[in-house]
Image 1 (tube, rainbow, N blue to C red):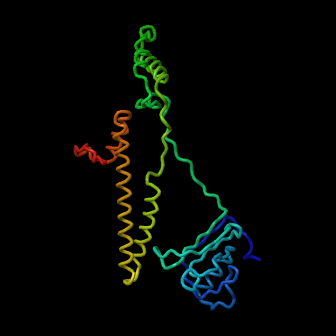
Image 2: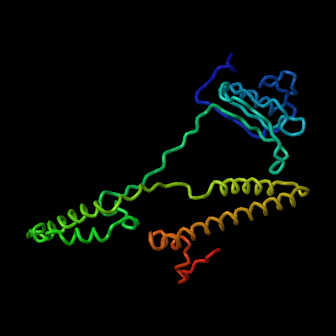
Length: 266
């Protein structure tokens, strides 16, 4: 009964184990399997951790080489084996689980409660009314004090309250991944192809190189599209939000060489 006990925490173990000699029966190694040192080690390990193997269809030719183990027998709702010859001569295991993904909340960057909490670049600010409000303030009566520090504190406090009437709050900044999702996928594929290229046999090396070159071209195109989109946004925001324009230029780094010209695209 030891192999049927569920232990905590939930364990998922998968990969290319390369045991073509193993005969499987409901996720267990059959007694008729030819015993070797490695198969004995695998059986002992999986029994000790209550792991059950979920793949029952061949993943390469007629062999079940890619295995999926878990000690939670209710975790996987559906398992399918699909062809994907672009990346490997092995089939892909698609497993649908009941596990809920945990997405951490983005880390917020506090903007404070003073002048830094206000967005002075917002297009809806009525600068004329703000200037009139500040000009019509009786500063002589407000700033009556003998101490310079107290005068400065009063001045900043009154000015901040008046700015809050006309200037909207800054949006809370969040740290997030800036790489587009399509490029992240391409980068993962590129990494897999690089691994294949390092251990591939000479017969498939040229095909892998060709696939890698295509992925590299798609990644470069993704960079170009992103840069072009940012440049268009920056040009449109020159009048409304000049800060964004300079932020984009600072990110490109060309301003260090005195080159501030955009490549305008039709």
